[in-house]
Length: 274
Image (cartoon, rainbow, N blue to C red; front, side):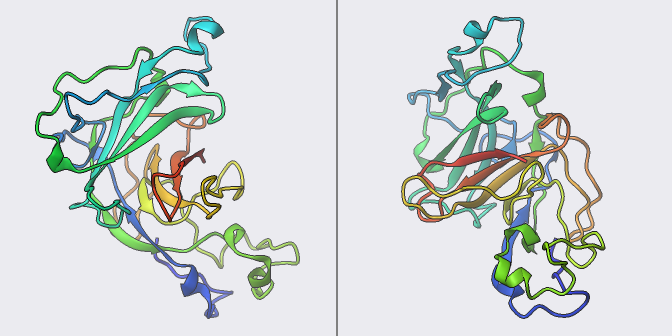
């Protein structure tokens, strides 16, 4: 993850300005308590606070129901992940919060071509009477069911793919041809594959970088979190490729990416399946 790009072995003087810290989460099957960071375990949720629900306006898919029955079906979100500040101080926690909670709608959504999600930032100490009997989704697409996992994080530096760089910088790179393509097959530039992570750069797969401006302030949104189907081998900590995380995105290979506004994480988050 932290191999620095070169131009056919030559140092690139401006590349460090494009480096981003990344935390590889390395989820592995395991049970965690609601007081711990995890994927697919119990959520720390106040018993007197309404559980997040999806109104179903964008639901699609064939679940032995008619289109009209699926669209508009109101269903509880499933608790997906918890990330505590004590474990992941790299996350941009708003003042007064120390827990990021991720909730997932387990029905396909038309504009996302996969599950919808919600983020909740809270202060864990304020949950004094947690909810024990947590609502279950009304309908579950088996593709969006993941294994309960614990995290085994490592930290590294990640550099962008060439598609993220401005054309004036690409023109300086000798290993690229006139169309900005590496005729040798990207041998001069490190790549990064499937990984659940905090921060870093987006792994564009089905499409290149698109319009990710924040609709509230116009700032370019950046990678906050990625939850992947599986993990490729990690060069930073020598962990081998892991088992499949249980869910299936994009028909077998992909990640649910959360792009957030760097000015305010409460501004609308962009979800991308890539």
